[in-house]
Length: 70
Image (cartoon, rainbow, N blue to C red):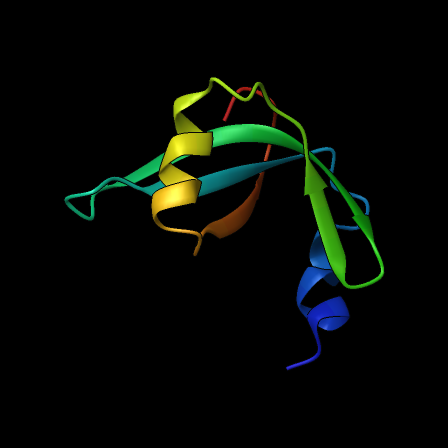
């Protein structure tokens, strides 16, 4: 499927629930701000955040629309 069509629901979305995975496979959801341009989605977070470490270990994540409170 075309990446830009997959990201279409998030174009006007301010925040999404980013689900990354721990070493044991447990899913951890974290609300993050998102910006979509074309076939790329951008998030911003601190480099020391645990979600960054989880994404380094397991780069496949899931996105779902949400509010900044989750």
